[in-house]
Image (tube, rainbow, N blue to C red):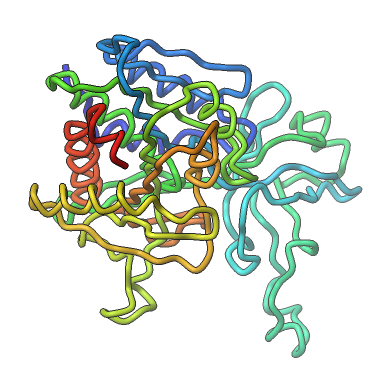
Length: 357
């Protein structure tokens, strides 16, 4: 039975999994991919999806998505019962206050809280124009003392904190709203591509990896890429959309204009031969795509392309508005085009093609 792609994305988006605490996502991936793949989860909660039709004597194609989302961690609790936190991953301070979060206590139960903000009634004139500082923020769970937070709610130092947001889908516009599209949408690409390949005869082995801790330093992919030792890698990402603040000629990641392929970012310059091959395949298949030259940022491609003796690697992203916040928009049509492109690239690869890269 084919994977229900929309339900897959919904389940992955709603799942709790900040960097270092991705086990819920790993179990979801295992459930969804067990029909197509032999599944292994390592001690970092990296997931390996070995395609059941792999033979072991062909070139290996790695397809990767990272499981972690940005979030927070409890650092301390003061006498008033307010929770001091640090960030996991990159946050803009202005996006943090006055939002719901979920804190996982030491019994594994998620407790809702609110990131604090000072009411406008108490703001001094100078404060009104100041950019807020995360150092001055807390999370309030409605407690009145430190003892209540620890003893009644079971929350203490080290507990992970995830943004609280619920997935929804607009059937008219085919646009999804939810959290963690960076990078649960990439994970959903990996699972769906392996599902599509059930029907295909290909000349390569394919291993999917759902790597952990990307948002804090590409850590999981350093392990997965060395274990898999691929000949080629395709990294799937939820890439930040820019159509809301850039002009038509400057935008390189707009919703409903197809997946984005990166020529470079802060972590990798894409292998030009693999890039040219991927672009030619998209043109041949009638897949709209967007070229991006990113001044900064990075993906698991930064770690994977340096594994072993070097791995030709390409990053294909599904444009996602407002990533690294509590909410984002993503086009289901762009997601489906990304799957189609990934499958088409894999179908084109064989020993000779790879040797010429």
